[in-house]
Amino acid sequence: MDFQQASTYTEPQHLLRDIASRFDRERVAISFSGAEDVVLIDMAHREGLEFNVFSLDTGRLHPETYAYFERVREHYGIAIELLMPSPAAVADLVRAKGLFSFYKDGHGECCAVRKIEPLRRKLGELDAWVTGQRKDQSVTRTDLPLEQEDRAFSTEAHRLLKFNPLADWSSRDVWAYIRTHKVPYNELHDQGYVSIGCQPCTRAVGPHEHERTGRWWWEEATARECGLHAQNVVKILG
Image (cartoon, rainbow, N blue to C red; front, side, top):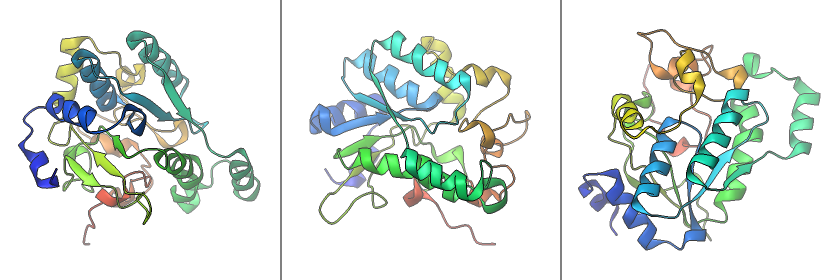
């Protein structure tokens, strides 16, 4: 299918059905961490589509996030594969720079160890993955397509596709769906957290702040990406 044709999908469910028909179940998976991702899990469940689900366990998530993983697992009766970083790589980083080097050096190095490396290992087993990214989540995601070749994780020997069924949705759309369908969500959202990542790098935001303001708040807005979706980062000119 031509990537441009993906724009003809009027509902995320249509795209999820197409993905399920195009790939063997063991070669595609939903990446799960937040509110958008659980919407995709709920949609797939209601459509009778069987998708494998994985999540990144960096070792520094909030207790509420781990509890959330368990609620989703039990609610939908699914397995959630937790991807963990190399213990040796984490030990080397902490030994060299301590536990909070990202406040001084930026978050890139820590994310590379705790997120990018385990994700790369997992994506090497897949032909496609499904994310809950939205265009309006950040100034760096405004060109996000529904379907694309993932150039950040593809290799010459292995072509990987990435699907973003909620690319054209807003935060309001996501939460309207969650409330209408009584979808489980992370309890941190009730405490003012909107975009939720690792505990040291996430804070609650005020009512008029952008949702990504609570992630890596000590860095410039254009740098608030961890590298999972590096291909979709739009270069912002100063």
